[in-house]
Image 1: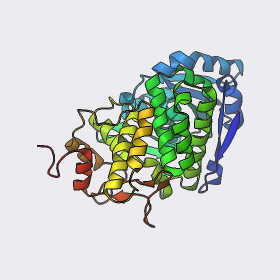
Image 2: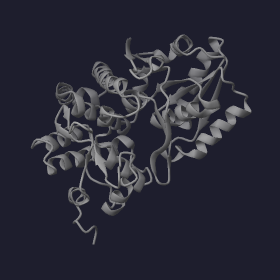
Image 3: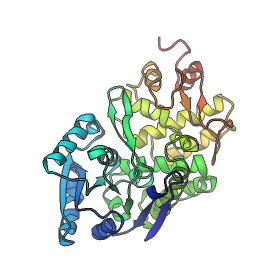
Length: 372
C-alpha cells in the first residue's frame, strides 16, 4: 500500500491522503472512520457500480457497525445534472441525514463529481471521501476537489471546490474495466506526462503493452506517478488561480466535443482528441517545438485512443461551445498548451493562451469563414 499526501497550501486543514493498493475496499470502513469520522455515512454510487461493488461495500460497513445509507442514480454522463443533484439531496433530507454525516463517492468521474457536489452543498457542506472505481477517476477526477454537474450550456459549469477527506484507490477494481474505459484513463496519464514529466511520458511509451494487458505492476506505476503529478499541481493551486490550469491541456476541445455530441464520447476519449488538436494548435501558434504533436498523437494511438473529431462535432458548433469554456476571458478562448513534452507554456502572467479564432478553425480543419 502506498500513501500520498495532498498538502493544500492555501488551507492547512484541507490537506488529505490518497491511499493506493490492492484489496482496499475490504478495509474501506477502517480507512474512512480514521480519516473522516461521522455519525452516519451515505454511499452515493451509480447503477453500474452498485451492481459490482455496492453490496460488498455496504456489508463491510455493516460488519464494522457503522451507520450507513446507500443512494444510487442511473449511470452515465447524461445523468450528471442538476436534477440528479436535487434528487440525491432531497433523498438525504428525507432520511434526516445530519451535519454529523459524510458522503462516500463510490464510482467513476461522474459519481465523484455529483456526489462531491452534493457533499459540498448539503447543509452548506459535509465531508466527502472519494473511492474511485475507474482509472481516470483514480488518477485525475477524484483528486483536487473539483465537483459539479453539467448543464445544457456546457460541462461542469455549475459546481464547487470541495476537497475530499480521503481518496481510496483500490487497484483490484481496474480488472472489471472494459478496454475503452481503461484506454480513457490512459488519456489522462498521457496528459500528465506532457504537462509535467518527460521521463514519465517515455515510460508510458515503453510500457504501453504491459498497461493494455493490465499488468499489475505497470498499472500501479501509472497510478502512482499520475497521482503524484496531479497532487503536486493541486496542492500548490487549490482553486486554479495559476499553474493548475495546465491540467486543462486537451480539455478545451474535449469539453466542446462532449457538449456538441451530447456526451456520446467518453471523457478520456474526448481528452485524447483534444490533446491531439491542441498540440497541433501549439505548433501552429509557434509555442511548441516541432514534432511535439506527432509524438503525442503516436502515444495516444498506442493506447487505442481516437484522434479525429466525431462526425457530428462540426467546427462551428465546437467554436460556439468553446466560448462558454470556464477559461474563456473577454470573449477569447484560452488554451493550456505545451512547449515540449514535459513542459507547458507560460508567459509570466498566465498558464493559458488566447488563440485567434481563425487559427483554431484552421487547426480543427475548417476554412476561416466557417463551414460552407
